[in-house]
Length: 437
Image (cartoon, rainbow, N blue to C red; front, side, top):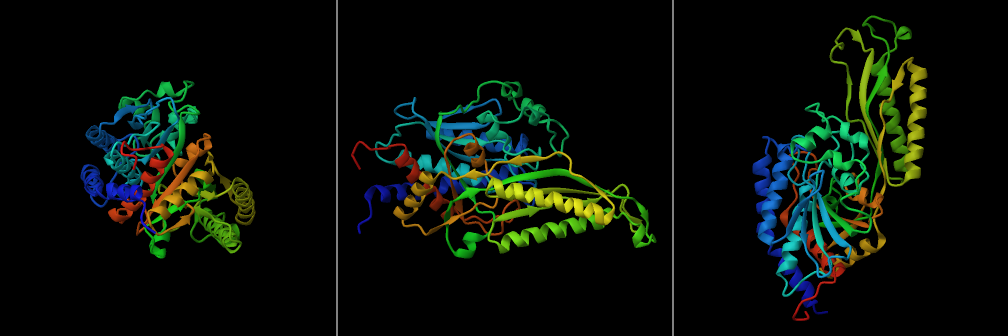
């Protein structure tokens, strides 16, 4: 069967964006390098550099640039009918401390390259606006709040989030937004920047964060869903500090209680794995109090954080019940008490079946090998789904995991994902050409 000339032209236009993509990543790394990796702290210098870099690239494409009160950046290619719901693509530009250069940024670069490719097609113009959104503060490690930038734009960020303190500076989110020229007060009670009905669909491209595509030898995947989660960022086990020679029957050892709790959680995870129910459990912090711990001291307290995630709300509810039952059992066995502290959560992000089918069809039309893939991680697209906006996901092969300097996405793989994204934009935006191609 002969190749569709429109698809061939699109693939060629995307391939021509290699220098744009690789050059953007080179500039991004150079401007935010911290030695081993990159650091683009949410509402910090590195993230601001990334947003300003994007704006400079937008000028070369003739795109409209705007920012909302939370300083998310929007690059808009105007459509023929600007009253129609817009199509949106994008991701975040912040990183974890000493992270990799591709997490989040790959989705922004892909959106930029897709628009650049589509603008190369003869006479191409979208029926509706196409918007690339560079999102602020996706990485919850900074403020311990999920999806700050996207939820701020969608009007779903809780007011309490503005008083969350950044973990490295101790200053509030409101203070950081204000320092960079944003308007945190406008996020309280005002109409959202992205009101219901303004966005007709949102696509996020992201590097894979477990090496599933590397294992399968495939460049890309179409996402099937984003897990929801519940989190306890600052939990503590309170026992009783004692002398190293204290007999076991008298001990209320917080460290051993923590170990028993961790092993118990892993057993729960093993059972879910055996039952074929995907989930994940992470204890990110796990330590005694440095002010009191020592070689000859029985630990009297133990601090930890907990993130548990799954792909449907009922599973999350069962997991939380199981976790709390485990807490009760460890408390009784070890003579300690758990103080779980503040709880945060993020909803499950369901992929729209129509968008998913369109992305799969695009991969097939382009002749790209692909597979469906559940996301193991949280993404801003889940905030769009929670706000009632249909969304889809594209994943790009990446070795060595993410959130570390060794991220290893290849530009060829990014361009494969970009071609799928551009194909969807072309069809969903009703693009045509003066030549009728």
